[in-house]
Image (cartoon, rainbow, N blue to C red; front, side, top):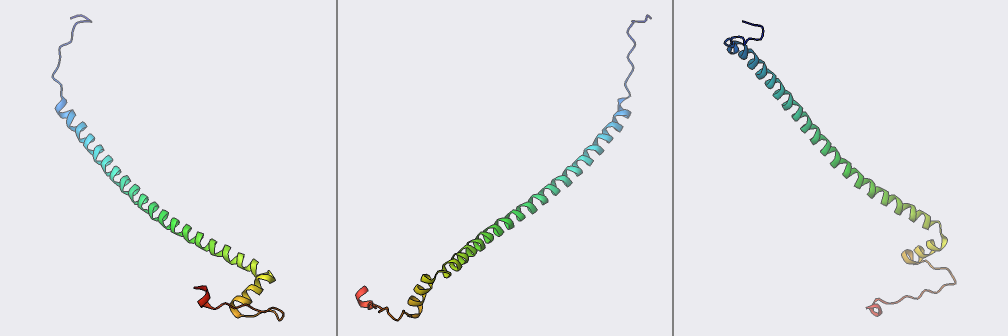
Length: 113
């Protein structure tokens, strides 16, 4: 037989070799499946935590906005209380106090209706 002659084919010993390869592939797939399950559960739990924190943050922001509005109203009221004319209006309206030279005109409620 020459150098370029076709070599006789031998029967492959795939049955013994394939069992080891198949076992390694199954082990690899099992490890990868366990890893993916672990990673998926971790991602899901983190997603739930982030969603809960986002809900809490939205609630806190609405509370902060309400407090800020209240703060602004109080500051506006404090600024108005610095004005003597506004203090006079409050004294007239709530307490019925008038300056000595002023004569109040009181309307009866029957006339308003």
